[in-house]
Image (tube, rainbow, N blue to C red; front, side):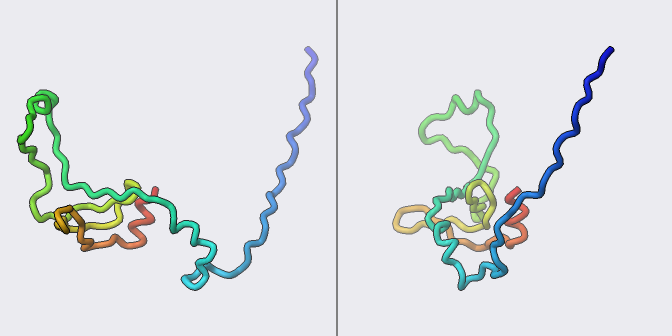
Length: 115
């Protein structure tokens, strides 16, 4: 049986990256981040949830009341792109629902929620 000798794989080289400089991004140096200000985000506020059998769901009619797990006056969660941003209370402004923000979660908690 004749065996072919397989050459060793080439050695990997470290990638070359351009030096970005030592100046950190601060509030006074936001010129490079201005393009982020026009990115649309989806903001969602969930009033409550419930679980229901399909049979009960099919029996719902106009005017039916569906009870939610949250109680009246309990804070609602404010989500941005499906990630928790904070909590608030439901208000009515000019015949429209709105949210008064009562709490913004800490930066550390927001970073944990990203993953």
